[in-house]
Image 1 (cartoon, helix red, strand yellow):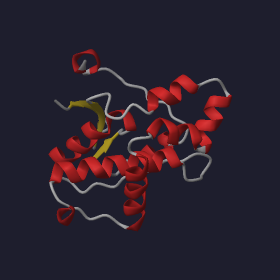
Image 2 (cartoon, one colour):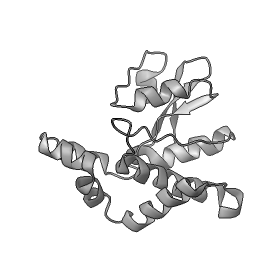
Image 3 (cartoon, one colour):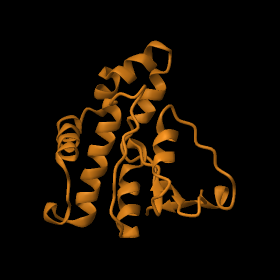
Image 4 (tube, helix red, strand yellow):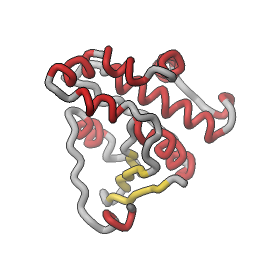
Length: 157
């Protein structure tokens, strides 16, 4: 799959993610993580050996529960990659989203259907999209925006 997009321009459209990416443009790397590629995102971050800041983009300038669950899942995967909590520095918000993910880990579809973003999408007829987005670690590909603003894929195998 990486050969399909390597060297090509990739367009990512999101509701608020684009603003989060713009705010992070000074970073050496920006990884596009989601519930569907959380493990690959965490392992790519570990491989880069840089500090990691998780940006939850939210919706209409508000916290979005689904973003928090994703961040909690990525923290879980980072902990697995690193091997211990003692080597991971997580602030109180990070620990809160991690705990929230642990609570819903076996019920991600339910959690996404019950949060305000999921309810809104279901009401608009996108229930199948919500189901799709709740597929934990379904993909092993992570888009990475580099410091010179080029996109490179990371394939976790």
